[in-house]
Image 1 (spheres, rainbow, N blue to C red):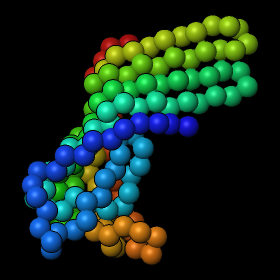
Image 2: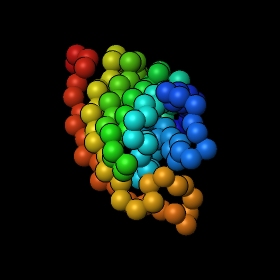
Image 3: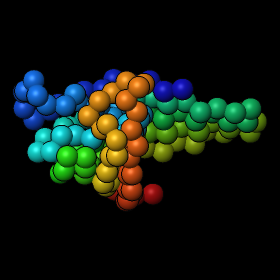
Length: 142
């Protein structure tokens, strides 16, 4: 289960001939569409919360300003840089009654996306396919 608010900022007013903006929602989704060539989009999840639980433990993760900067480099290609400036994770072991907390700067993520098919459209009948290799690197300390 997860919950969050997302803010999307684009670099210019979109003309009528431009493709529809395809938001990724940092940390939530990765659609097959890409940002149009020459456009820059900053997507920020203002506040996020996710919960994972099992019979033995519960993990809550809170994020603030989880952001992705997406730059259109080709008709069906983009590069992206993502960063979470602040995150906190709490893991509660229900059997041993122990709680572990960690907080700090999240990882930085670099990715390149190449979309195949109808990358400028959204909707069930216009599904596409993309290849999106990424590299994650630590920013904080452990």
